[in-house]
Length: 499
Ligand code: MG
Image (cartoon, rainbow, N blue to C red; front, side, top):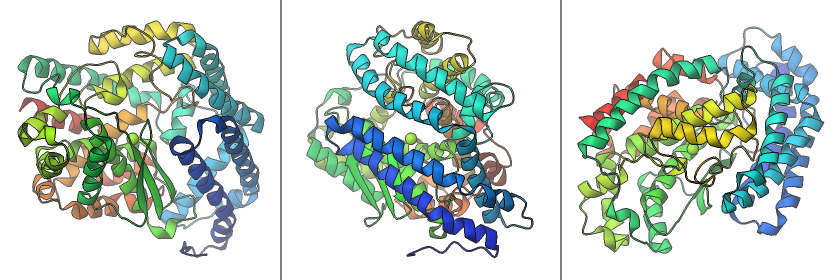
């Protein structure tokens, strides 16, 4: 097979690797179907596409079950190297899910997600939670069943979070969020009174031509040295990154016609995700290891590029010429002013538009709410008002309707419950990277010179090349000697906003 060069001295592992290839292919096909659904698919075929995706999943699950005996044998092997151990661990996790979650439940979840997403779109358009409520009730019920089937220690929510962030529990997240909330609140209060960073900026309201903004984004991709043969960028309402293989990674960005920073930083953010996927060692292609280790670690890469690099003074200076050349309305503002614009701070309703400082509060709110829903502490009908109360508690603003409150995110309609915390864990890990990388290089000078190859190599060597070989906690311990410590992020924000 072209490029297939995963090697192990162990015949059981090699036998599994051979049998895993069709599963890898099904994942690749699903990824392409999903990518197409969000970019080019005619809207009228969503039901058929949902069916095709669900069937692909079921075939995958069936096929996966054929590996049960081999995986059991592999689990007993001793003297394996790290890659082989990772191989067996990831396979076992995958298999565990297939064995514990009955096909009927999986099908119910996928169908409810497909139907629910369509209804959610309508509900959000009409700002009417009652339309979506029965679907969310059904989904929460199904996810609680899923948690019961998967099994857990402590809170049932742990079973769901573990799917996205291996080994992370509510205890871990509570331990991270409880010191982070007051620390960030303290910084936010000071920023708002100091007026060093604006809460709104005239550049937010100036319209741009999509073709001009596209040229800016393409130039930014060039600056970031994104590869031309294995990477592409398209357009979708909600930007995302997907990987068909290590040699085919795609991002999308968004064009809303004004406030160009949203488009610019969507591009940088998703490119950060793509760099991770592209830099996994090619020998891991076609194996269970050819993916990121967790959503939190994946998000740490996108956030590192978007915020720590992208929103730095040096990066803004670097992209300023292309901004000025393509968006003539930028010219009256110097790069210093553009820096202030892209770093404006304002407690607002919508998570995807939130700044670096207020973003994590949006996550804490969702985490708290999900935990209570899955734990059965609150009913779905109580969620909208609890959402609004938490917004007021954390950010001092209260949504005036469901569209700017509980209906804003696509996740719950798609069954992604247990996912949100990974966004903040990603910010936290990005902070740890920022702290660590500066021991090896002068990051500001590197950005100023546009030497992003150096940054990429650094990240590749320490994290990307391993794919899913090490679980997220192990990877962090190996690199930082600790895991999910929010202090580096807090220090960075303090320095950036208050120094
Ligand atoms: Mg992301």
